[in-house]
Length: 270
Length: 319
Image 1: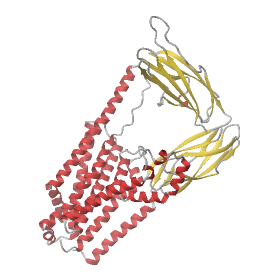
Image 2 (image 1 turned 120 degrees about the horizontal axis):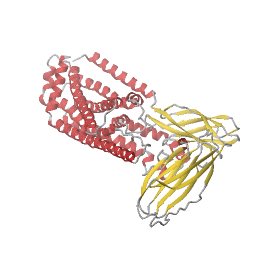
Image 3 (image 1 turned 180 degrees about the vertical axis):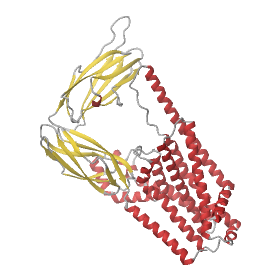
Image 4 (image 1 turned 30 degrees about the horizontal axis):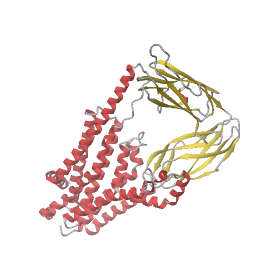
């Protein structure tokens, strides 16, 4: 399943600035009107390349307008709807925009604008469109919010997925993003089909290696099929050491203390 | 009780007159202060850089300002963890060796024991005095850390940070105490102070350096730069197959690492200081609860070796 729905490269070439009243700015945008289709839970990525073809440095501002903040997962690696930068003559900058379409997005269409300003003036305003396809929508309906795992042991938990679209979803599978050396021993069933409105549970056996120190960890659960994908982060996983070690240590300590007391009683205090 | 206090006082006084101990202590203090000052200046410069960026953005009329980057002032003590692991342990070893060898050299063991004092009281006095000295050293370093962070770094530590720092210095005390008690026990056990010192140094090298190194070297993912699995271009399924076959090996490797008190000290310290990610939202108590095995790894050998010291000293005739 593709994680990235589309990568679109838009070239916004900034020609030399006005000189002697002549129009010296040219733009090359390809394509000029961008429209795409995405299902809920999917990610849409755009990459913008901005080049300063002028003979001197300029201050730029790149903004996403008319789009609610919750759709923007990141702009230029930050979580803002605006980014400011300056480009020296001949240099260019790549700006990545990542959009996350919410699983239960109410909108059918997203229409927004990518606006580039140079020295505070709008240089380019690009209309962008996303059609939200609601036929195939997969959601993770239930998963363990807090998970306590013991290192060196196998443990089980269940993940419930639901079909909130209007079409049947076939061959739904689970995959995981885990810390190093952690293993998913088994997932039952391996895959499932869900009709519209149905839910189904996967039973997952996870193994945490004994070398895993006690710590707070997170894992990502991804439910997917050929039409839809959804991902959640279980951010509250506490890995603890086996409590049986505590018992062994306690017994060792008691034996040691009892042995010392016996030794003193047997041979007397000197 | 009063006899033990007299012995404890004498221990502190003697140690403070020991030039070798003092020179190691001064080295530890200098290194600690330098690392704290450098760390503090780094925190200070990060705050100043953020403030300059905010001023610049405000002057441009921006209202959507980036939040303060998460600075971790406690991480200035990160280098101290390494200094305690090496110099702190050596300091404690010298202290433990000196506590016994000076009495042997001066023939004062027999003299003290000819008075109305039991052998276990003598050991208690020595343990009490020297452990108090180690606690004072840690307390002094903690105070210096807080003062420098506040005065130089312009950082005021929250109550939660202060509690974390107190727990960290408590762990550092336990680590130093462990090497003091090992040294005391071995010097009581062996007749010559030089043999004893050499034996303890070997024990220290094995537990503090060789065991963690074996653990690291045996880690299959450390066999190639960039990680074994990534370098070999293995996918998750192949990685799973390999890890599955090496479960026992992994347990053995981890077991060797767990034998090292230095590893225990490092693990709990890095969690308390926030050097290891994932503990930001935990209180010091929660970290101590989570890292109980590391705390036990420092505390339990202390208790067991103290008991063994009583047992060895109780029946020893050639003092």
